Image (cartoon, rainbow, N blue to C red):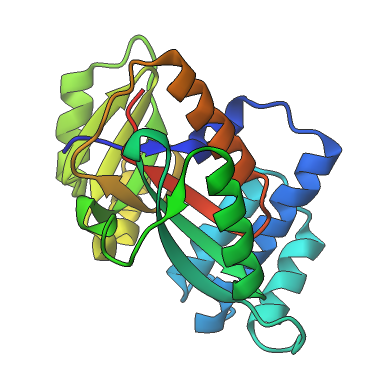
Amino acid sequence: MSGHSKWSKVKHQKAITDVRKGKIFSKMAKMIAVAARKGGDPDKNPSLRIAIEKARAVNTPKENIERAIKKGLGEDKENQLEEAIYEAYGPEGVQLIIEVITDNKNRTTSELRHTLSQYSGRLAEEGSVKWNFSQMGVIIIKTSPSQEMEKLELSLIDAGAEDIKKKNDLVEIYTKPNKLEEVKENLKAKNIIIEDSGLEWIAKTEVKIEDEGIKKQLKKLFESLDENEDIKDIYSNYCE
């Protein structure tokens, strides 16, 4: 597997201001509300459980989480949300998959089109980008300098990992989408601490950009897209 480039990983390295916290909490609330449509009990709804875990990881207030669940269950009839996936091209033809949760798709489409155009990008036709991506379950764990990687990899494979990729002190574990929760439970049974998990779009073929100017343009594009509260996640085939 060639790996992937997910801009949201960079968010952990940013200083989170109060304004940014508000935007993150808003994104988390949308994610929870959509997941809650399949049921309000996280023990019986894996999607909701993952969404709540992500919200707690960024210190989303408990009342925000509870309010989002109620909205998803239909107790809040105003501003109904819908999920959508956009395919796009960035500068130098970098492929993008952009997941959104919005209460106004026309507004979101217009905003996306405007942001992309500012950085030599454009929206793409359905299927023109997605063919190069596969949806996988991804689980992230941390390792220590003393960790025996060979022993760890055998343990992860025993837990059901399809593929494993190490990046500095992090290990990304790939699973089939329908096996994500099962593998997570297997890891917990082995006392392996999970840092993050979810379904992600993984690029089959990546591209490297050597031009520093294009790299800066891509970074600005990703940052600008990330500021949009409707955008849930951004995936690309850009490999740093």
